[in-house]
Length: 519
Image 1: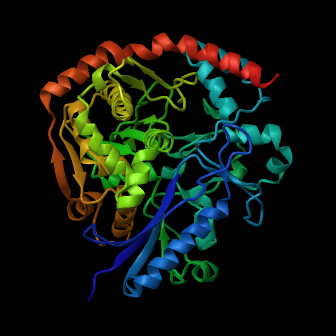
Image 2 (image 1 turned 90 degrees about the vertical axis):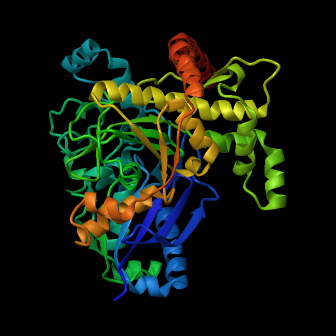
Image 3 (image 1 turned 60 degrees about the vertical axis):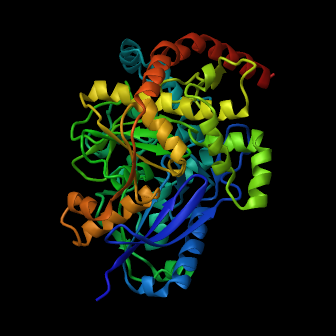
């Protein structure tokens, strides 16, 4: 009897992947669609996309896979999906979107928000986080809709994540897992449930309980593929859709990072560093620790927003020559750019980049910066400085989490598009001073999502057994100690001081530009 397989989908910011995965962790067939237009911006800083765009893209991918590999479709025992986080949909009582989905990249701000209770203002001020709380409140999409689109909010029956909406389109069941509730919603991350009415931070995004969807655990069945969804997607009617978790949670699982001495680095649109821990702790002050896919674990995380997106930005703005050569030779522009990394010494001859192309929760005023230019620097130096700058940001996050979580990382696992580059993996090993491991596929999120189904269906007793059978280290990059000492010196003596010195200037820039914009 042939082994059963799982059909899984990884819905990303810039592309969507579908794949058939077997119980040994092999991707038997794969299809990817790169979005021609990942999102549209009605106003500067906005990022929206039709929620049904993702559903129709999923259907197109599944129809292609099933049409190409009908024998794999016949062996499919379950379907899973994992999506980008903090991307929200307003659904009416019939389950239809009332407006386009608002993506995690969106930077709109509400002007008129409900004032915080006075006693909460005092609490937040005493904790030194009042500015961050007020910024989060303004940047919460639900508050913007309440402020600017009250008619939409009044008609909103359910305010859900993109994962919840896709679950509904495929099964007719509006359910989602606690591991997917990562975003500006009133979620109690420590207890993995919706926040109680008097929860500490509920006042930041006070979505009524009746507008939130029911939560289930990863590994539980959401529902069965409906006849309508089967017709749209070619996925066999009646197959179970198994709840998994967010893309980063599935990626961390897929990388086998379930032990306290391992870290997962994701080199995607958002670059992240994740730990696994059975103890809840805030990775950065006032930033929650997110639920992992295994129900007894958490994944503390530090993000570099628009991390490896910066390479796409560089390619678009500065790499016309490589793009032309790529079109002519059939080799990717990224691979041509990565070859130049070998020509530039560690530290980019003094060029240091601060990778805050989009500010984060704890640095809401931040902007990107590059310092140290001289006449020796070329485009290749800037390209390497981007990679090193992202690395410094991730090192900073890892050191902070090690200290707060009382964990010591011994091995780093990498995934995401950037991990396909041997040069980037070696630079990462040199910067962190740790072995960097790549598994058999860079599609770790899809692999982790499939692992959930194999455990749920009893093929494996638990995630430990699934990991042993489905995850294999393909290669290991050992650090160059001499280069690591250089990077540590640059990190301690230059990078760590950048933000504090530049923050006052960032605030002045924001004030001046905002004033000019609204004249």
